[in-house]
Length: 603
Ligand code: F6R
Image (cartoon, rainbow, N blue to C red):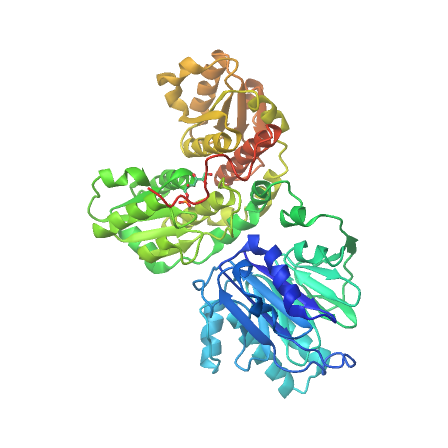
């Protein structure tokens, strides 16, 4: 996730872009940049913009930047605050990116899936690349299409239309783009699967990843739809649909949100926003290409060991169940802080799973594995983080920055990447189901956690139980509940309760049971009956239409009708929603639970 912002009007653009980027820092903050250019006399529409865009870009946070970044002059500008996905955070990888001539400047939020193939072709055609990013191909493609349009004698709107349509035809992936082209008197905005909104002020126009930078200047917001492209010029905003190229009308809404609620997309807390981002985050993380070399090393390993902490450890446990079942490769999962006590079998590949890439215990465990001669892997959300410098192979989750301390979208993104490994080693198992999971997860988010939270909020202890892959999901559900509500919650393998914890069950101890119609279903039903017999109220999450479970449980939460593997992710989201809603009911500081830090860099 990155943030982009644009301005065209009569004011000097740079200070407005800088202020806008500060509002978008929650979307990424490892580097920033802007490009501005001066319009001409404003009369003719396209031929009158003067000069090349001036570009300033740097590694680091826009909020730490000096006043020198605001000095560039020009009344048309674009800016970017970055959360790196391709190419480490650095001055050269910061946006905007330019073509060979420097006449075109581009800022981008999203991922260009086919950039490697495109880059190869463009280099063969003589284009010179400066950065390691996927975005730079966009600037060079536009250069190529503008040159073709020039050679064909196209000018003005026709030339720009030709370049934009060819660009949209060529790119695969997700992108919100803001573009400056020398000679075009305004901004070009393009949207496909990444957010982009436009603002309409008095004699000035704005564009941004969300409304926060715009609301200070105008409340009139135009929401672009996927595959829209728009020209923001002194004549106003014109929106067109791709591939038809026909002009389309988009409603302009008056929005009266304050800046803080706009940053959270109208959600009360970042955690809620991040829960709702999961359909896109999961799909983006699962669909990415994974290096064949990495997969072949894992295939050849005699066993795999995962090292991780907290939620990341639970993602490792889910991986274990699925990898062992479908790929028959032995997997061990170790809490990173305990790993140094153990020996590592010869031929073991070790995977560190860490959202931040900075967790000290996980880094120590991976270094230990490397020192023992193991091939070492990292699954992480942060490009250029410490773990990426230790690992031989790095696989990225595509969650974007996670602001809330409790992991939600980063956890399901880890599951997505780990499931992708299972799928690639397991000859395409789950591939179709998980490529098509988006609507299932959207439907999951319609769940209303009110009834379940009403039971949980008054409890002092809650048990979470499941079997098979739902055991680690129960551990994760319990961790979410305890860390943000401060209610003691314990995840257990359902079969273990009778070996001790049964003595704690009373009518005041709710049990959250995850019980879908998989192999473990019959024995889970017996376990749930045993818990009911001890008087515990049962909240059961199960497959759609399960009449038996509905009958036994006090509260039955049906998952959307889908394949077994999709139910695993849906159940995780339901548990997050129950924990979140309970914490809100209890008035907790949801995004910043007491005593916890987002990144634990001490041992
Ligand atoms: C729980 C949570 C933590 C982290 C753990 C590891 O919601 O966020 O348990 O999962 O601190 O952090 P990373 O994944 O950054 O290594």
